[in-house]
Amino acid sequence: ALSQTMYSSYKNASSESILYEPIPGYEGYYVVSPQGEVFSLPRVVKGKGNSSQIRKAHKLRHDISKGYHRVTLFKENVRTRYMVHRLVAMVYVPNPCNKPEVNHIDGDKDNNDASNLEWVTSSENQIHAFSTGLQKGKPTNYKLTEIEVEEIKRRLSKGERGCDLSKIYGVSQQAISNIKTGSRWGKKCSHIM
Image (cartoon, rainbow, N blue to C red):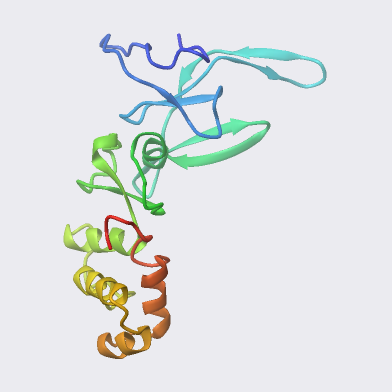
């Protein structure tokens, strides 16, 4: 069985050794595997009055919301639902640019393996959804392509003014400012600019 100090040696039904790491903010309560299995760790839980009970380690069942797998985590009498792919990414997928969303690379919401996940901006996630056919029609909430955004980033780094670029690309000065600061189209990354 899983213990609070032994995350890496739990064997699944086929006797394969699977690595489990603690979920940030839930250390000592829950662990997750790179494949998206979430386990509750054994612990003593306070009941009503002075009573307490021992909770055994167990695999959490996923429920499905809009095609995404979710689990419910409890800590200090607070219940919070999490998307499984987000938990896996938090633990196993580096996010050096501090991007806010997690994308399934192959578009399969059932494939929560860390190798199939990447951190993206909202715009990148939407572009991926349209380019892979996961969403039909044309994206409506952006005017710029990734190539244009990269051009704008390069031009800004060379000292061109945002007000001039906004006229050239037909977007607001705020859109250019958002690209510059990284609040849209990805955070500033040293390896991008």
